[in-house]
Amino acid sequence: QTPANEPDRESKVKSLVQNLLDGNFEEVLKALAKNNNREWFALHKPTYEIAKLEVIAFAEKIFQASAAFDPNYKNLLAPKCVMRIYRDVRFSKNKAPYKTNFGIAYASEGKLVGGTGCFIHIQPGASFVAGGYYLPSSEDLKKIRQEIDYNLAEFESIIQASAFKKQFGSLSIEDKLKTAPREYPKDHLAIELLKLKSFIGIKPLSDEILCSGQAIKEIVAANKAIAPLRAFLANAIKA
Image (cartoon, rainbow, N blue to C red):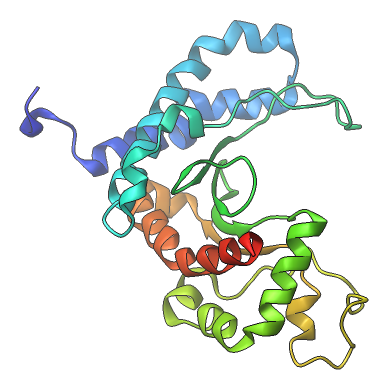
């Protein structure tokens, strides 16, 4: 098949969005939220499998476009980065067996298992792209705080950069201590940053953005803007 015969980027994005927002799979997602059980899902699994293939194709396009600023993205395997729909309910009070969204988790070096990376959440009315390090281990958290303490000017230059602020506004403060970490005085110059337990930027993706065919462009811009933060955090935990 020649490139001229391939659907263009906008068509592929629209195809994905039609499945998730305008097509049958939107109804499956909504119905799954009301009928989150194995019997119901088994009857509708073929619809899920079709939509999953669309998400894989979507992820591949994002990785290809992101390779323009980081060649490592070329080596990512999209099928391995699309998260399973099955929930781990072993330690959860919520025993619903299935997620009601698509998730794509990745680092430019490979599938995101732990550490710094990016995550795309696709759900009608609640989509977003995020990047950084979500809830690092106590050992990694200690190293990150130490690196911020030692190199505050560099860290602030990253999160105050125009590209970062345009894409994310600021670091998320959702996971934050109420008081200063015991290793640092409460009047420390960077105490508000040192209180953080996660170091991530979050960019909402409206249904309108997805439907406009701009989703890939918006997500790639977020990937690029978050790269300096990820590099800073990765360097900190290697120390």
